[in-house]
Image (tube, rainbow, N blue to C red; front, side):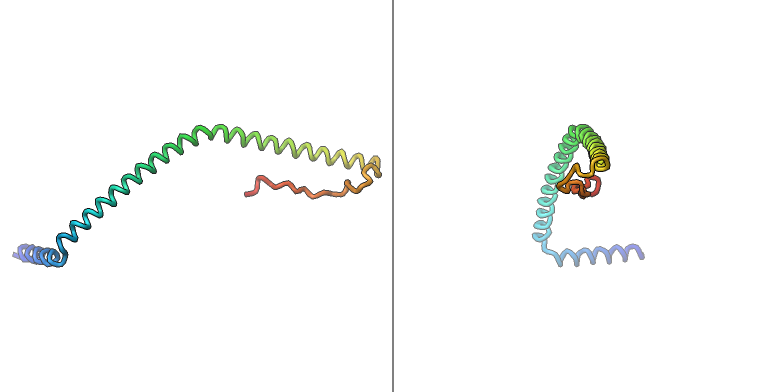
Length: 119
């Protein structure tokens, strides 16, 4: 008996809700939701295709990128070594021949190269 009264109350509440909302408004909302769903599915398909294409492109260039990165690091080490040797040679020349660089080029020159390892 109690369940039956609960069921009747639920049905009455449902009927009242149905009278509050126009059927045409509900159909319009359903159509809009279907339209939005279609657009979202299209967008999802486009993004999935873009992600697959990006993944393929990255796979193609990642080996070259890592190889070139190693090459640049090696070149930087080589250049640092060369500049260190040049500085030491210049210091030795100045120690042996103090007036070897009369124009003042022997002054300590600050290294103005950018630090590539800093972000």
